[in-house]
Length: 107
Image (tube, rainbow, N blue to C red; front, side, top):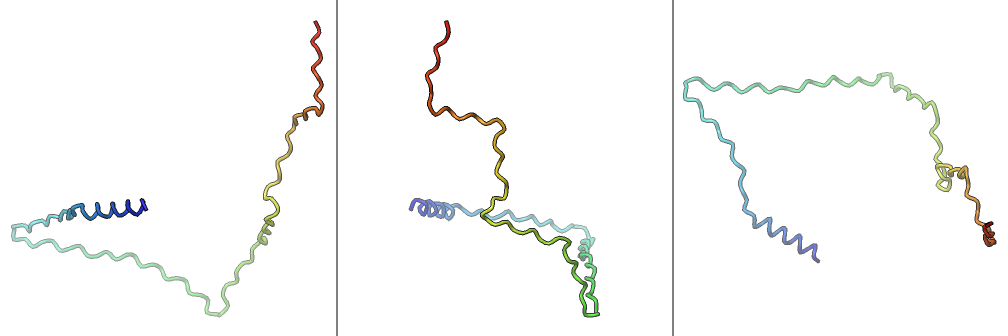
């Protein structure tokens, strides 16, 4: 509801904003001399594109070269794309299952 009210408010502000017409380009006054104005430059045509090569008229199109390698098989989604990381080289020893009290320090 708040979003609709915000959009409505923006629309009202846009309508209430005075429209400033774009400034018109000043038209240069014609020269007061008796010389005629210079002729407009001739339109520049873009260079013509070379014609596309015609297909062979023998009726047999050029053979499409076969790919050198067959496409790679897509792996099944159940298989991970990367192998699992190897276990760390220095594993932390597991804690003892029956913790014994620490021996008393010798005097």
